[in-house]
Amino acid sequence: MSVVAFERTQETGIWSERELNTICAALQAALAPSTGREWETGTTEKGDAQFYLLGPLPDQACELCVSRIGARYILEDGSGRLLFEHRNLDIVVLHARAAVPSTSWLMVKAITLWCAIRSAFHEKLEPMIAETEELLVQLAPQLAAFA
Image (cartoon, rainbow, N blue to C red; front, side):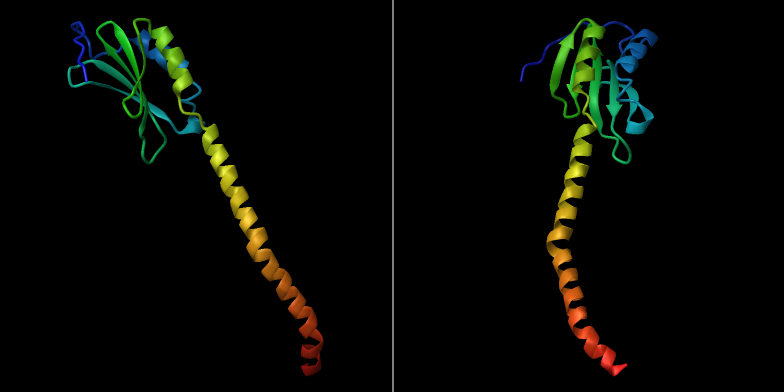
């Protein structure tokens, strides 16, 4: 692994209001209240500013991170893998918007689970119910004789 030394400015750990507005505007869909996502800022161990896109509760796992190191903006996924880097924040947030995990995968998993449960019900339980109905139809006349 190679280490690259970046130039540092005096106020490296603070995001400007313009930078935060740019990031939040680009991630507006991901930060919608219905997604349960939130954002937080922090700093690296060297004092560089970082922006974290956090997943929904209870885990609030980091899904995306934008760091400002010197004059460069670094975009990483939740695992710390480098996705993109550039000196222009507007270009970085375009890549961030594309990299945000979509909730559609969750919907696909939920639909698949629903179909699997429904299929299991139809394959396993429905024949048992049908057999019980047939048995009841055959035994009903005999049971009526006891009444």
